[in-house]
Image 1 (cartoon, rainbow, N blue to C red):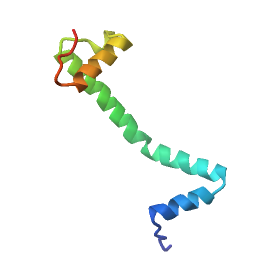
Image 2 (cartoon, helix red, strand yellow):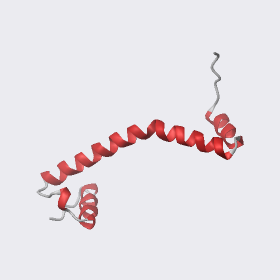
Image 3 (cartoon, rainbow, N blue to C red):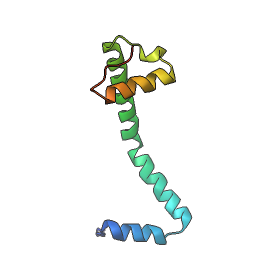
Length: 84
């Protein structure tokens, strides 16, 4: 079967011309195709933040949501020390 080559712009126009149910099917297909990558990245991120907390004498599992937000903010701003 020959391969049809389209530019991104052509694909977007084609999708925009499609009925909503076909657009939804395409969205679900593309979403599920990338889902495993997002799950892997999420697990990696959780593990890394647990390690970062442990290295700084903190326990990610016992921190409140507010404490986690402050901790992440401190990690992002390297010029400040993490609040203990």
